[in-house]
Length: 270
Image 1 (cartoon, rainbow, N blue to C red):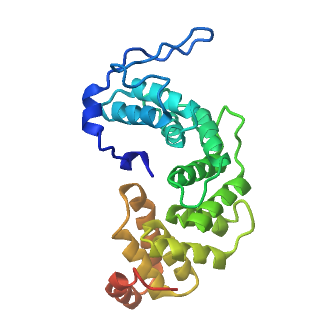
Image 2 (cartoon, rainbow, N blue to C red; image 1 turned 180 degrees about the horizontal axis):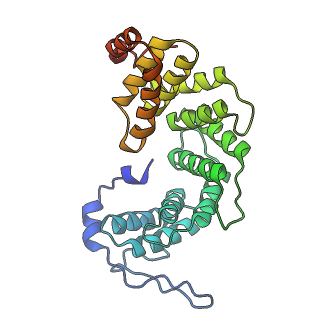
Image 3 (cartoon, rainbow, N blue to C red; image 1 turned 180 degrees about the vertical axis):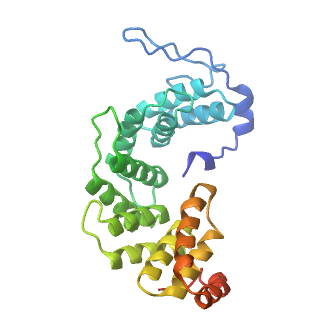
């Protein structure tokens, strides 16, 4: 379950009732005052009640209050609150950005594992993906240095055990580049094919480019063209550049046929 997907039947009532009476005191040796919403929610409340309070406070833009509630809930072992805190640190959302702090919290979530069918599965997978990104690039000014082998392993876990298209895509790119292990085009194609069949535009583009490089000119161009119809704004640039490069060396007949069949390639099985 994602935080943004959580809905409580009491959400409207809680939104009216929840008022923060004190901020969390972080200084060592100074006890934190409990927030008390008309006796409804305090730091001694159950973790899920604290999570609900934090969620509603966040929705209302009261991010300091949300952080406080999430911290109390996280201390009581609530995975969703840990995840929310980690995301806020990673984005500098309501707190000073601190990737190393986010990394530590994501690591806690990942280390606790998840039972099959658990409601915490989404949080666990999100943590794996975040850790993979951190290990791929490292965190400047922290003990976390780039570890491509670890990043590749985490992407593999998310891709294979949970079927996450973005993990399949990132894993394929690392395999193509020989990052964190040996390069293997056929293995990369397998993961790209799985991701693009789930609608991942980036995977479709890279898959098409691999086909084009292998000499499957028309099919490769068709996938590259189809991918542009689904690209997100952040990815359209590199995908368009890849497509234009391939089109620039193809002949007119191949380009014409590829454009014509592009709408049909979304569900093709390699």
